[in-house]
Structures are given as structure tokens and as C-alpha cells.
Length: 154
Length: 154
DNA sequence: TTGGATATGATATAACATATCATCCTTTCG
DNA sequence: CGAAAGGATGATATGTTATATCATATCCAA
Ligand SMILES: [Zn+2]
Ligand SMILES: [Zn+2]
Ligand SMILES: [Zn+2]
Ligand SMILES: [Zn+2]
Image 1 (cartoon, rainbow over the protein chains, first blue to last red):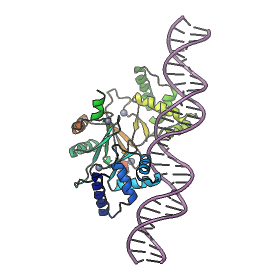
Image 2: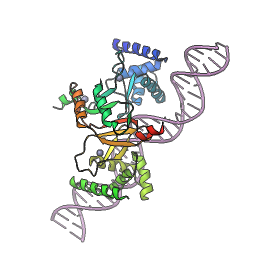
Image 3: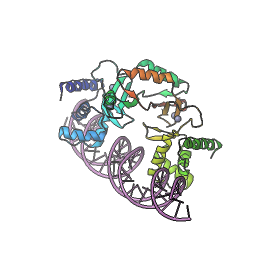
Image 4: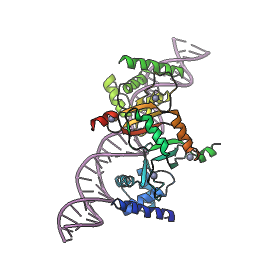
């Protein structure tokens, strides 16, 4: 485990402690698998990687439960448009977690999590205000092509 | 079939003709099923409704193909976050189809399709410009609670 | 130490989606 | 007209994501 991941795990334990929950060994391992991946993973992907990385088999049911937990602790995000999961890019940031916005490359599968400008969300809210609709999640998933893949295709 | 749906079907046939394609009987029926629904439907939902409405069984494989066709003609949209399909709310509008924005009620499942303000998309694009990411679909799916459901919970 | 709460395992099944090959239908052109 | 070609649909199998439910294990406090 890289020092980087080590530090993120440590911070994650603090986050869980602060909500009165525990980052168990297996939850920690699942998070580690996600942290080590450059692309988001499905629950079934995690089962495979977990087995390779820890020489231990984990039922997919358990992975889903651990993902639910990690999402609740805001350590992991679910990409709804892909059915995949990725670790939060801002675990070690101390500031409040902003509305996440994901840039999903449809060519290589990489995802970049960026904070969305507050005024854009506000504009968006204003734009739908007339319909009486109350926004909930406020998570945006934008598909496209990343910088690297654009360079390759040239 | 209501006069309203009748008219939309007629316009849909014109749309297909303009692209050199045909709105076959079964494609038309699938579109009719979607037009008659107040909530989006999965491909399997469509199989069931089709059977009830037309006393004819349609393989789900065929439904997926017809949905692909209808989406290509922009007569139907796919909600990526739900794995469901709905007819476009603007088939009979003559103007160019804008970037669709969907307001999905997580309580009752209803979905409202509204055109997104151009300047918001532009802001969004500017906001991600520094990352070098090139936006593709530009379809936003926003989850929340609709006006009616808010009223009920009061 | 024991009982309740939390976490995990095991099994089954639901729900959404695609791959592939076969058959049918329509259009076209000799 | 009749055969060839292309498009549309059917049939079958399987892949992928997710949930339901009951059993077992682990932890912690009384
Ligand atoms: Zn995050
Ligand atoms: Zn890429
Ligand atoms: Zn539309
Ligand atoms: Zn509602």
C-alpha cells in the first residue's frame, strides 16, 4: 500500500469514527481496492480485484453492503449512469464535500471528480424552480472524451 | 388511441421519412406504448404493456432494437440513471431538439423533460474547460421530488 | 458471560442488457 | 415476374448489475 493510500485510509478511519461507525478490515480493503484503481469499478469487479489483492474471496452481497456503508460515509461515490463505484477524490480535504460532478470518458473509462461551481448549481435550481421540483442528490455525471483520449485520436 | 397520440405518431412518421427510415407497425406500437405511459418504462415493462395493449408478444430483444431505432430518431430518450425509456416530450415541436434535462421524481417515478437553458450548458462547459474534457451527450438527469409528491407529504 | 447489536456469509432470484444466428419481409432490378 | 440483397424481426443463450432473505459470526456492553 502506497504511503498516499495509507494516509487516505487513516483519514477515512477518522471520518468513520466521527460518525460513530467503524471502518472494519474488509471495508478498509474494499476502499483500498477502489483507491488503487484508476477507473471506477463495478461490485463484481471489486470481488475479482479483492481476491487478487488479498487472496480472499468476498461474496458480492457483502461488497454491495460495504459499498453502501462507504457511500454513506461519503468515502465512495456511485456513478449512476454506469453502475460503478469510485473512491472520493477529496477524502483528505478538510473542507465540506461539495456537490460532486463527474467527467466520464466514454473512450477509456476514466473518471475525474471535480467540484462544481456553486453558481452553476444555483442557476440550475432556478431554472427548474418554476416546475416546483425539489432537487435531491445534485450529482452530475457528464459524459465525453478526456484530454488524453482526444490527443490519441489526433 | 387518443387524437393527441395520433398526431404525434403522424409527426413521428414524418421524422423517420425525413431520415430515410421507416416507422414500422411494431416500432409505431412501441412508441405508442411509451406515449400512453405517464412514467418511463423499462424494455421489459414495454414487453408487458405491448402484450396487454396489442394482444401480441414481442421478444425483449426486438424491443431493445426498436428502442435503439426510436432513440436514434430522437423520438425516445433513455434515462441512463434508471435503465428506462420515455417518449420525447417535444416530438410535435418544430424547433430543433435542445439538450434534454430530466427531472426524475424518486417518489412517484414521474419524469418531466424540460429544455435546458443554453447559458447553463455554456457555463458548465466553461467550468470544465480547464480539464480539457470534451462534453458529449449533454443530457442531464436530476433526481428529486416532484410538486405533487411534495404536496402529498405535507 | 451472556445477550443484543452489528457485520458478514450463503443462496436464490430479479432486473437490465447484449451476442449471435435464423427467418421473414420488402425493395430492386434483370 | 422472380431472384438477389438488405433490412427488420424472432429465438435462444448468456452476461451484467442489484436485491431479498435467512443464517452465522463477531463485537461490545451490562
Ligand atoms: Zn467526492
Ligand atoms: Zn479517456
Ligand atoms: Zn426530447
Ligand atoms: Zn412525484
